[in-house]
Length: 553
Image (cartoon, rainbow, N blue to C red; front, top):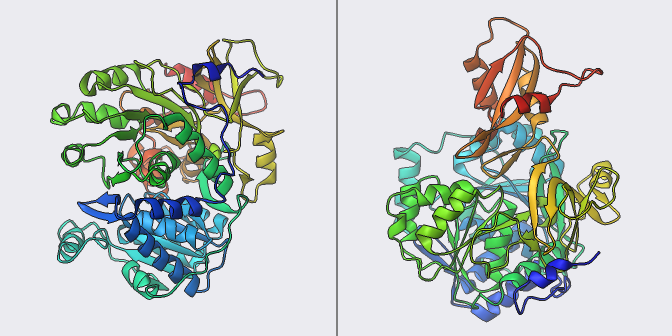
């Protein structure tokens, strides 16, 4: 295969990286602590922690985890939005030689139970706001310890007391809960104070993350991302942006949640490596509050999904911000719409660069070069040491410009799905990861996504799999048959629509929607419900989702 995209690389960007440059993410963290010391690493709610403070706090947390009997390779879950506790817990887990399991805090009890059992997590760090979710299933999972934290826990007194009081008693955001085997996050840090942790020698083959992703079966699978996978992707991303980035001087806006692989790699880990400051936004949905926060920083980098950028450019006050230092605006997670990209460019005088990645690829596969002048509509070129080919149904490459499935090969491709050798073998063929996404490539090596091979629905950058929706809806006693599809939506890209055949004529839309809310994360809940007498099927009885989807266009 000719890597014709290398000719499209800006000067100074290498064609290959060394995925073994560092043995582990811990080596990169420790190097950054040595290099950047008192420089700020993370800020949230105006509270800053420096690299030296990150060193101390993560060492304390690592020591605590080891003190309660957890061993190298044990899985520890983290379930919270973007708070200072997140990087402290995350890097503490990795320094202890353990595996981080990122959990969406909006998960229902059913979803949480599956992820904790599948990953065999021994402990969880959870924000108290979501403790009732864990309470419902604690008897069904095997957690040795539950570490609970409140939103303001990393803030200095008296601000900590005020924030936690307001969140709990004024805003009523923390429902009463009852959990066993708990310890407060700050108490865990105190317990690790003054004690050293055992720093295990990590190799590239050791697992760093179990990052959960949906599947066409509807069962969420744990992508096994090794330290080598993650180090490789950091080296690849760094290679693409290195000519732009100044060590110790970048300020990156981290509004996407850190439990999402995009923000985890592109923001948290990449700019930790560069000694940059991650500005953690806890609630980006509060757009006026988000814009006010942006006004406090001369930010140089921002990443997000299309809906985030669209929300910002349409929020009063955003256009008045100072964009003179902005170098990179990176869009991913879902397709960036041309109208949004052009509006962004007009307001900020910076190009919105679109990239493409998947959880199974740690995640970055392609990105537009930083020196393009305008939005192109493409997902860019493969990052260094990465091959991408466009494959037809017969498994052979298709002619240039013709659509086919994108296959990816590179050191960032996962080790496989945890405990699912058949799913792994289906996804990875001779080292090539079959993405399930349909795309094209041009003569300059620029790729475009044209369609999705799978029936996946993309809601605000999050993967929603129809089988999971259908399993939940079909479990309602008044439902006979159901099919779930994605239909276009102007703000979220797509929304879920279900077609339902009733078993009981008394079934109403509200009853069904309420049932879905109990069992599905909010973005997965069907926004549209249509009752039908029958659903289109193949001659073997398989429901034809595509036919239903095509009707909606």
